[in-house]
Amino acid sequence: MKISVIIPAFNNADTISRAVDSALSQTLEPLEIIVVDDCSTDKTIDVLKGFEGRIRLLQRDQNRGPGAARNDGIKAMAGEWAAFLDGDDEWARDKLEMQTLFLKHNPELVWCGTNYSIKKNGLQNTSISKTEGEVKGEYFSLMNKGLCSSSTITLMIKADVFAVSGLFEPQVYRNEDRDLYWRIAMDFPEYGFINKPLSVQYMGRGSEEAMAKRAAAKDGRYLFPLIDRSLENARRKGRLEKFRPFAGKIVRNAMLSMAFLELWKPFGKSGEKYSHLLPVHYKALLCLCRSVPFSSPAMRCAYRILKLAGLTGSDRFLDYWKYIKANGLPAEVQE
Image 1 (cartoon, rainbow, N blue to C red):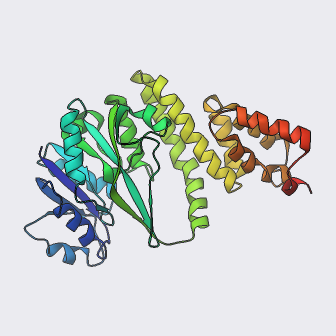
Image 2 (tube, rainbow, N blue to C red):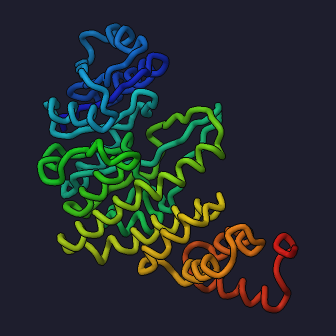
Image 3 (cartoon, helix red, strand yellow):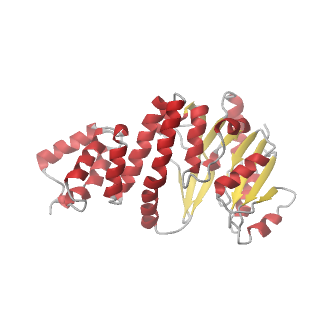
């Protein structure tokens, strides 16, 4: 199995060696390692010159982000499969070997991923997945049930897939990865997943609250148009039955972030637009949004309501309201 490793890089002088070394040290040697520099202004190129003869270095003449850089790598690749890695992350030594073995045992698959770890401020946690070992199935169903995860640095995708589903769309700000996953899943529903952390994603420092608030606001601005396009794509391709529950989960998670950060106006607008995708406890909160001031004590209770509802169904939500009816509001909303 001929594998092309594709690594986009932008101002990764401090981390690119770690990424490239992890690709070079694979127990299964790839056909090639393509590093695409996206107009770095630091010493990334100087560092990469130290790998001369062991990597293919492509240099862009315009900065357009990691999606465009990955596209350059895809267009230049000579392998039958593409494996993606970012310039500030790394792989386990047996990552490619384990995926290759899995794909050989499941020759009908044209893409697969693995679990991964997230490392931040020296602490490392593994992405959560409910499955054990290996699993394969319809992508949206697996994701909706929490039986797999997906991250670009874990994926291996057959080269032929891009001719059918297209490349990364750089203009899909913040969601170009999701956009590609969803398009591939519309055309090639079967997805394989190895529940072992074979990649490490490094997260930078910063104000978590500020970052979360910006992300939640941008989710409404950039995520929802992607959902609209994908719903239409699913209708055209006869995939709506599978995509709709998954889309509802994505909307609920975005709205949960908005509720946590008390972004009630976008919460209300999102809920009204996607009410057809929402369970009863979200619809009830939308009624609350319309009936009380955004700053009221009841609204400050809304996140707890969502949390105790379990995000998955209406039973716990209704039980919670029965509790309130019998015992009164929680202390924090009695003012």
